[in-house]
Image 1 (cartoon, rainbow over the protein chains, first blue to last red):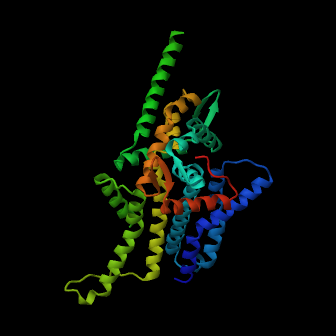
Image 2 (image 1 turned 90 degrees about the horizontal axis):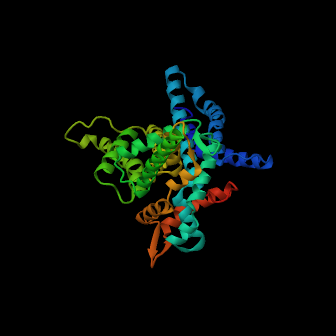
Image 3 (image 1 turned 135 degrees about the vertical axis):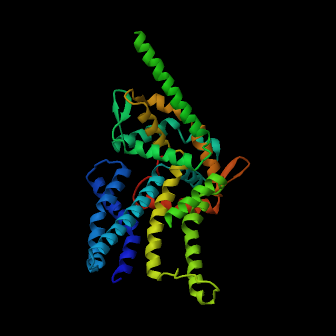
Length: 202
Length: 168
């Protein structure tokens, strides 16, 4: 078990490593005036963090393991823990970037008291959709062609489908929002069918 | 350990949807395993006094720490992802709608018409009230101590990174 304690402490500090890499990357990108989505920067930092953490873990712990099977298991353990903690940091940052609850809390925090209608007035759905569309385009999950949007890479679409399935398994009583969105999807489907009918008629 | 907690979480959610979900998740995934491990360790320590064989359930502290770190990292990843399941993340909903449109694509106007400001905010304000982070008096919302301590780390994180507060 030689070196296990420092290795565990190092793995626990994985989110701090990603934070400092993001801090350095932000400074570097600002200096070079390069604009990249903040979320993409964190994802790249999480990916780049594998190299330094693997090197340090090898030095303090992994190289001291004699058996090949134990080494494989230990390396797999380190890989899972690092990625799970880096993913948690990504979500923490993502909440600060996009979460409505954090935004509402911040609005109230900065003014002291607010009514629901005052919050709504500072939260424009059209701006919200445009912000998210920009982020999804920057992350290459969707692409624009003419005035319409299409799927580009399918990662977020696959995640969305999995999330919707998991929500159904948990029997989450979704609020009106989901109903509204699914009605919107149905309305969208109907309007697309009407467009097709118009095109056929033309 | 993580899979067991996940099963407990599914069973609890399906039977009685908790009012304070963040606290319930923290209890199931973070606190419950520590209580269970402490009970097993205590049981193992006092095994000699038991009228039946309890086996060797107690594990060395360093091994337990390693196992708990693995469980904690997986649990943290799950807990951080959970809001996207519950709050119907607009980004994920947009991806679903655009993905569902196949080759026709979707215009920005069609996407905006899908999202109603009332439905975007009201459920989130209710969640914050349920979690005891926001209190309402005479139609005005204010932060509770819990709400303040919850939002402060996010503000500190953004400031430390030199970024403005997120657009929501």
